[in-house]
Length: 158
Length: 158
DNA sequence: ATTGAAAGACCTTGGCG
DNA sequence: CGCCAAGGTCTTTCAAT
Image (tube, rainbow over all chains, first blue to last red; front, side, top):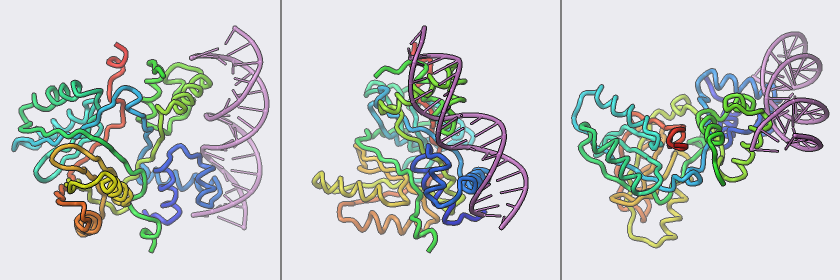
């Protein structure tokens, strides 16, 4: 279950670009293609390397507006909250949902076409639900996702 | 710059699994491998298909705790805010940063080892900065990311 | 735009240091 | 663990439609 610095380097490369070929990764980490392939297979089998997802330019397909919804829920039974969580995650416009502690209960990132669309999503999927007591909405001016390891190579193997 | 339903199907498949082979995608959308290959190349060239990133199990590498930071900034010049944004996005533990309207200015998702680590990150990279006037922190109990198109096939081509 | 065919590159496995 | 070698498979290009 151990990860050495070679595994770490492989993970780092694949997080930046999942379309790298095995041969390219092997060259970058200084291994023969077959050895690199074995390591990647092992990382997958151990559940460390979970999956890979293409990133699509949402603006290019007409989803020009991003927003964050801060949702407060009533004090309800777990299964009601869970059910609402699942139904929220299933809304196509929802990009991510976090169930959190603190002032709000849900942080929901959404991608929509325009303001009209945003209003409709909030109304239909949040305000209309009995479990929701309040929704605050913020427009996203700028978003950046970090596709990298949460720690540097040197920190990981000091 | 148009996207037909075949392009749409390709994007949908690659968002779910960027490791699908061209041959597999071709079969799934009902095209010859060469035609499918051409389409994917075109989607990439047009900037619609941007990139692909592997998803790593952060818990497996010791990052068991996730949190959201709600950050308020002072009324400062743009370039100061921009600079802070860039430096924030460069912190390894930061998974995503959104600059937003409303009560808070920044929504920052972080991955950390434990509470001690969380405290250190907040202190070192946020509280210590003059531009930051307040940080509220929420622990993430549960997070789900949607790796799918923000609209259904039927909605896209009604 | 889509196709089939051809060439070359790559992945993948098995045996060995 | 890592490497080499071989076979089988896939990617990639191109002329034709």
